[in-house]
Image (cartoon, rainbow, N blue to C red; front, top):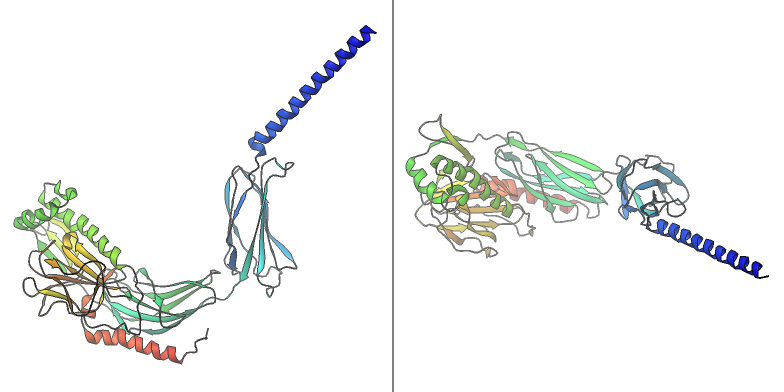
Length: 469
């Protein structure tokens, strides 16, 4: 009996030991599954907008991502009664991020009257979690079907534009899902603002004087990617700009240039007078013009019922001593030793020393400070993307943020910055682009190219039904 009891106790001890090992193995396996990267439990992600617009020519972009590796994906579209698979597949090579470009067939066999359709994206990763099926994610988005491109029509425009000059364009762009509209002309994009009534837009634009060819077109895009491009024809007046060769004297290099260079460590470190001049005329000029463009690129909305302009006449009894668009070549001793070149971006006007400068039209001062070669310089925003600039002032009588009235004295002429004599550098900019000041200094031009365009547009809009497409 004692012997059997011993063996029984031995068998029981042996069985308990085996159970302990089994539990350890199970625990180790569970810990392995729980902590192993191959059994990670983070679901993948699907990135797409809550509602999408679709047209047959535009693919739908979907971003898929996972913390480890993407697995299987399936994209389908449904009209509520029937579903069509658009794309399905596996990512064979391990990757954490992918962009799908899904092309929806023009006729997928779904009912277009049952809008919106539902776009469904199913995604799993390559984890061994969930019995090897991986972590899953599902995203559903609505699709609104839009095959119609925006409607665009020119309402009124300036009859002509001169190289270096400006023009006004008013147009209509309508679409129930209109997303953006702009004007392309002169190698850049012009931003219109709403005019009078919904669906109507207006913009000032320019033909940059350094560009030889000019084409203008209106571009309208809706949320489905449908795009309309409408060409706008202006009478083009080609203007040739002057080329000047200017000799540099030692007195100028060691006087005005040395004085101006001394304000900037980047320039004063150069001891060669010609190198200093080149830095002032190119590096400093570029930095100063960047300041100007930064403050003149915004299109400030205006009340078009009251936005009318007087001809700009900033300096009474002034004589023009330098032209706009002048291409200047600077040389030392003789023309074979050209040092630098630049363009003159305004008119230089002179009358008497420290003459009063007036703002011919009301506006808001957006800059009033020292600006390198331009010296003391106020900039006034007259709204609608139109700005005026007044350089080399001896004193400023306005501050940034201040509103000015038509005819108000804003500064006095001087010779601050890169100026040898007392005068005013007068510039006009449209959406950050320097334009020919003479246009805006003639009341007849303003009447024929600006005011008449507004009147023509108002007559057309008044006869057009408010709810017309």
